[in-house]
Length: 262
Length: 290
Image 1 (cartoon, rainbow over the protein chains, first blue to last red):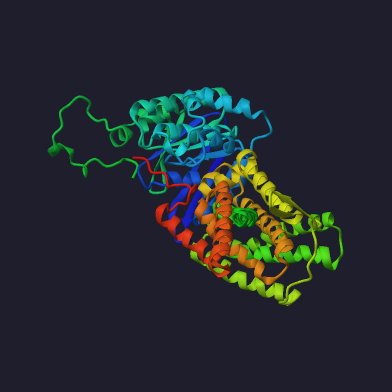
Image 2 (tube, rainbow over the protein chains, first blue to last red):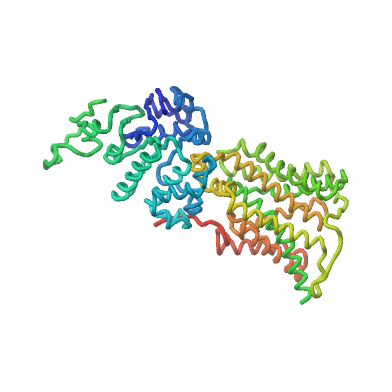
C-alpha cells in the first residue's frame, strides 16, 4: 500500500506547491487524481516517484510510505527499484532509440526473467507496437508514443504505476483504447495504478476511488461512482449541467455558482 | 603510385587511432552532452602510465597492459568524480571550460612527474616488417591498426547489444526518462568516462609505440575532435569513419604539400563538413514531427 500523509512540497525552498496532500492506493486498485492545471497533480506523482529531487523540489513535511517504509527521501532510481514506476506526462519516449530498444530499457531493472516473454506481454497489450518494433520511436504518432511509454513501464513489472495524463492531446478513440488497456493491465497483472487526469470522465469510468485536487490540496475524495454523481464535479469537470436545456451567456454567471468545497 | 599507397596506408593506420580516441570523446558527449576537450591529455597521461609500468617497473607487455587499462578506466572516473560531478545541473559552458583547463593541469602533472623530454623508446609489439607489393609495413604499425580497429568494433557491439550500452544511449536522450525507469544516471556517467579513459589509454599506447612517448602525443586528442564532429557527435561508427578520413587527409596532404599543411588541412575539411552537414555524417538530427 502506498500512503501519502500531509505531504508538503516546496520548489527551490520557497514555492509552496503541495499544502498537505494525503492519499492512499491499496494494492491492485485504480485510483484517479483529478484537478485543473496547476493544482499539483503532477507534483504529487513526482514526489512519490522521487523525480522531484531532480528538479529542485523537496518534500518539506509529511511522509510518503510504501509498505510501511518511507520513500520520500529516496532518489528516483531507488523508488523505481521498489516497483513504483512513473509514466511521465507528454509521451516521453527516447526518441532516437527504436521501439524495442525503448522497451528493453524499461525492463532494465526487472528481475531476470525472459526478455522475450516480457516483450511479448507488452506486444500483447499493444499489438500496434509489434509492427513498429524496429522503427525510431521519435517518429511514431502521439497515440503510439503514449502506448510505448506505458509499455516501457509495464516491462518493469511495477507494483504501482503512476500514470500522468495518458489522454493528453489524443483523439477520443485513442483515449478510449488506452483506457481499455489500462483496465485490462490492472485486472491481469494486479498492478495498482494512480492515474492523473484532466479528462475526468475517462478516469472516473475506470477507477474505483478518486481524489480531486485544487491549489495543492485534496478538496474532495470518494468512490468514483459517487464522485461522478456529485453536482460540483459534474459542472466543473464533466461540463454537465441542467442537461438538455438551451443556455444563454446571460445565465451563466460563473460568480454565482461557487464550488461548495471552497 | 608507390608513394601514394604508402601515405594512404600510414594515414589509415593513424586514422584508426584517431577514430578510437574520438569514440571516447563521442561516448562522453553522448551520455552527458559535455565536449571533453581534455581527451587528448587523458591519452597522454594514459600513455605515460603504461610507460611507467612497462619501462620503469620493467614488467612484461601483458601485465603492463592489464595494469594500464584499468588505470585508464580509473583515470576517467576520477576526472569525472572530482571535476565534473559537482557541476551536474550547472550550465554546460562551465563544464566545457573545466575540461579545457583540465587539459593544462593534466599536461602539467605529466611534465611534473616525467619531465618534458621524450621518454626512452620502448618496443611493444616487437620489431619486424613485411612488404605488401612495394609498400613496407612494420609489425608495430600493423598491430596498432589491428588493436585500434578491434577496440572500435568491440565498443560498437557493446552499444548495440548490451543492456549497459543501451542504457548509455538512453541517458544521452533524456535523464529524467531513464531515471524514472530505475537507471542510475550518475553511474552511467562514471562508466562512460571510464571507457573514454580506456579508449584514450589504448590510443596513447599505440601512438607512443610508433611516435615515441612524448608530450606531443596530446595533439592526437586535438585531431580526435574533428574526427568526432565530422562523423557526427553521437555516433561511434561515425567517429571511426571520421578518424580514418582525418588520418587520410592529414597523411596525404602532408605527403604532397609538406608536414606543416597536414593538420590545418584536417580542420579545413572539418569546417567544410560543418557547413554542409551541421550534424556530421552520422549525427542524430533533431526529431521534429509535423
